[in-house]
Figure 1 (cartoon, rainbow, N blue to C red):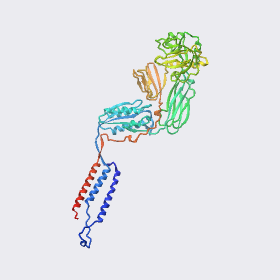
Figure 2: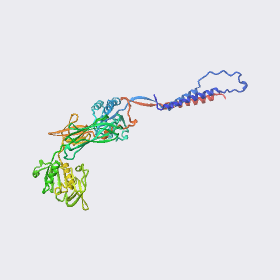
Figure 3: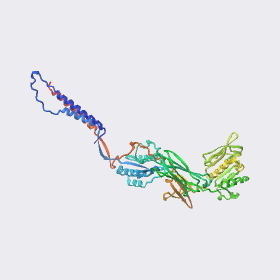
Length: 607
């Protein structure tokens, strides 16, 4: 038995007023006599006290009405209808933050196991969704609770982010097939600030974790231009304080065991700072690590790759070679190019990139090509122009990554180009009052770059030709078909694996996996070193946990109305039975009976 409005019992004090009025009426009782001489000299003896049934009925009616106002109810155990439960367990990077003696992820799994034991009844169906880069339905709704429990025990956290809103949408898509009740239970730290509160409107949530103390490496950048020797290269490491209080730490960076950065620091809340390394000792893995007392360790280590410089083998095809010396001087100065002899056109297997000067590339060419001052052919050129000045360039294209051409850069003569449908513009200039296209590039394999500037007739060593020389080098670097054996990547970001179908992948923990034959992308879930082995070749991927959404580990405030408690005992449910109407009816019956009895008594009284 319970009361929905217990404060209404205070109206029971009205019984005292009834008793007082009744007592006052009895003290001033009137006696009716026909004449004063008949009044006895001695007062009549006091009558024996008897209960007044009218008063008793009034008290009973008042009590019944007061109890009715308090809205009494009783809870009865009744068989519960079958339910479909969908559990969403967060396994994103922030769930690895420490809480007590474990992690948020461990607390979420333990809470989900408790939910299975206490909230799931006989005949209920349970589904399990894991929140990662994409929500994954690990176990479709099933009555086999042991299977769901086993899947929970096998879950491991990822080092990447995820969208809880997508997981909730996937969970609700399972509601249409539910025959009875439906419930979504979410086990998360709710650190996803992008989650709208309305998305949790019909879900029960089980928050885990607290605190926001976290320092994170947000980027490691190797400042190495194309073909720049590693020993002349520096790197920078960015660190941010995602906590609400100042934090102290020690930052270390090393290449092949040699320390290139060691510094202590203090960062204010929300502050980010970059730290520059010494000159790097050579190519290899650059490992940056934080030593700090924070809650999340997954973003305290990051990797980058310092590339080894290798000369690019370039085959030069041209009817004009008087500027060959300038090209050789440029190659010797950079140490990046190796011009092949004229016989290279006959043996393309020794060539990385072709350069065609004043001649179009053959249609059946299967190698990257840089085309300089192509001859007019009516489809890709519009004739030669004189006195053309550089007017702009496509700064978003990788050819111009890290630098900007200098103004002015006049050309004695240039070739106006026509942009093909599958290409993007690179350079454009001004010829009199007209804007003309001077360069374009296409990603279609094999890659090609066309420049309407005659880089051979122009002096590449002249001071005002510096931008042209760099454009030539940058274009060749972008066309370089050779991939580095080691690449840097971020957890959760799809890595293109076209051409690696069927390759065996060694994961950071030493486990092995195999790519599907028709795979186009591979998503690394964890930070660390991945090795792709196919035949005699191999590719190494150094994966870091760069993700501001997961580094900001402060849990979002979840409304108390959404926080789930124990609502059932699994096999039965509680049903509330309201008794307010019964007490109200009893009170009205008592009042009616009291009125009838008072009227009958009045009719019997002598006048």
